[in-house]
Image 1: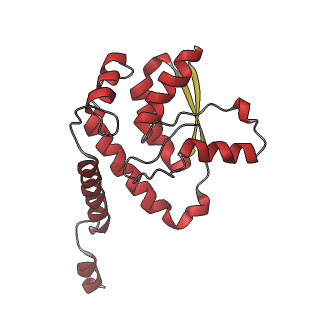
Image 2: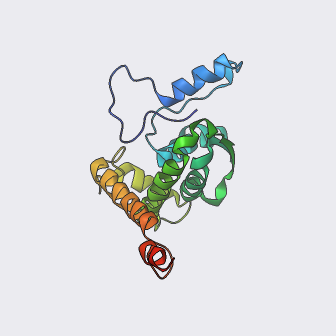
Image 3: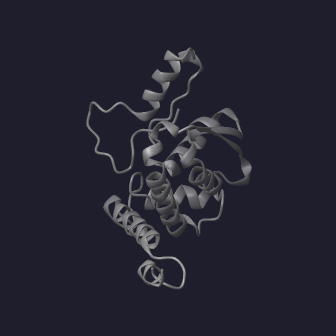
Length: 187
């Protein structure tokens, strides 16, 4: 189970980590507590991949990973895990259905696209699986973990929102050579 809390979330001393919440759910579902490993540092998908690898996979000599995440999150998570872990790990995905949230799926898909575009701008130049480059990025440049972040969480939020607005504006633009009003006049 991987995750502290979301990068943009406020944290209080009483915060239950995502990893603990998932572990509680798994135990309720019949999984033995002794079969669970928790990573409670990560605050984003980059951190999920990085800290799971450094704290769980590598110490155990494991190179096969199955990521369970929301169905709408799989494409972005796959890109991030490949970027952080590279070819040294065999990563597969088990999507959890989000159909219970059907009213918000289109909005969530749009947000995922904006976040993915931002991530490609932000870390796309890092070579996939380059251990030293990824270590340096996490230790120095990442705003949740680094000693000298190159961007703040507020700047990340603003950039993702800007990209999302672009998607929303594009979706509202008329399609075709003429506007809807011009076609209505001809009818």
